[in-house]
Length: 173
Ligand code: AMP
Image 1 (cartoon, rainbow, N blue to C red):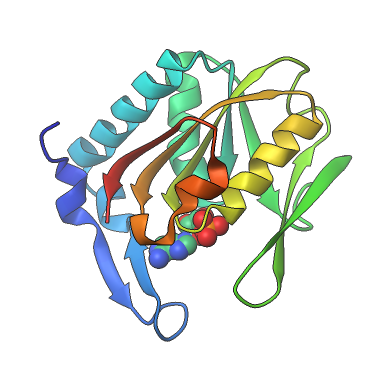
Image 2 (image 1 turned 60 degrees about the vertical axis):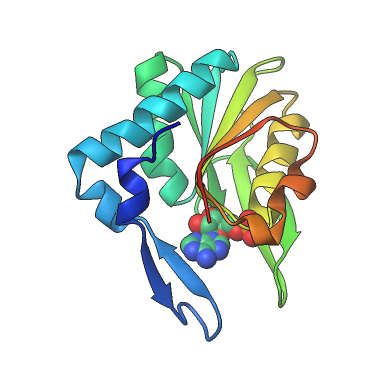
């Protein structure tokens, strides 16, 4: 595959949000319509190939990429949000961080039983966030048909955490 335009636009921000982390900033991709569209077209093609019947976006950068994919496919979009943001009845999953835990939630009616869900986020690191989103989908009796990420940090081996789900990452670092 030829190198993506978006790859050259990913900005490394050292020591954000804390010392030792190199943050992969995708905002320059959003400011470049051709590069942005290229990422959306690839994720859309992958979600279509996986038979997605709904797209789940993980707050908040997963919304930016997940919404256009859902619209392009003509399928629903469902939000996996951080703790305390969703107004209606919801289910909750915790996942481990380096220090402490984090929580994602979905509305109880966000996924219909048997629905094939394609889960989108900007970046796969350890896979904890995406795995928690997958547990939410499955608790709502949906089926995870795949994950789509712009970026995979291969040294963190998130793929192993998400095994055996199909995973697509547009770029590896
Ligand atoms: P993880 O659960 O470890 O796979 O972390 C993935 C989530 O954290 C995604 O929502 C990412 O946006 C964010 N994230 C983790 N590490 C980074 C990083 N180095 N640069 C940018 N975002 C990150």
